[in-house]
Length: 257
Ligand code: ZN
Image 1 (cartoon, helix red, strand yellow):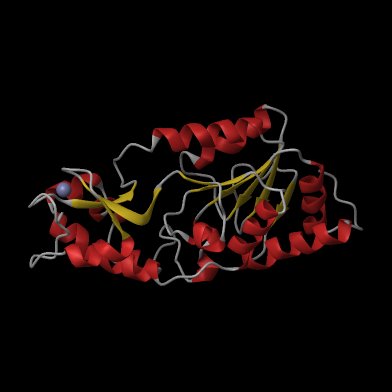
Image 2 (cartoon, rainbow, N blue to C red):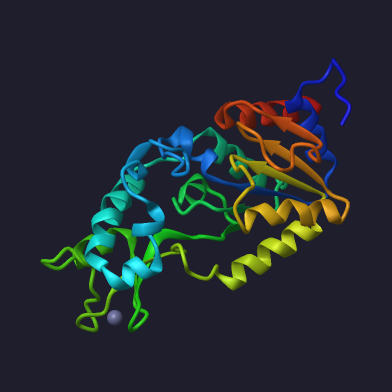
């Protein structure tokens, strides 16, 4: 897209939103970084720094060694449970409330979109909001899970003795939730505009969704630090802090009125 000197990237994105009949957002780890949640793929950061997540946070690890799994996952649970949404999550919720955003598709499991007030949320990697017994299916809320740990440090079901309780997040090696993926693909296919926020767009399924929007003649907007495979195809790219960029887009939208 040709940039006129007179309009900023935020203004360009505001104009795209205004001209779009159907806009969806696709978010990744970067939107939660300003909330204090490290992107686990950034080497040497946060609680992922001294473990290989593929080793401990996989479905095989959960089945093979639930004690070790929970040693890793339990502090992560309590860390995420304390986090609050930031201005970027709030801006997307505002866009939805004002009828300018259809839905948010997220790769994040941290519940922050829901906490910010987003109603139509597609969590393609699940959420820490609930955990379920793998034997009987009984569902537990985040705050209930802490009471399920036995003396070994393993979360077990209080209905069926010995039933292992697993977070309702997609672990490495697990299938993605079919319904969520189909909804995400359908939204991407019918969108006039997809706003990709805080995702490097390298990991499936997020990596393939912008392509669906482009293939049907829609536009892609990027709000992320660092390169993505879609940089050349994007109508506009905002490369600053997501918690500053999205409010700037809201302000530019208000100026269009
Ligand atoms: Zn059970």
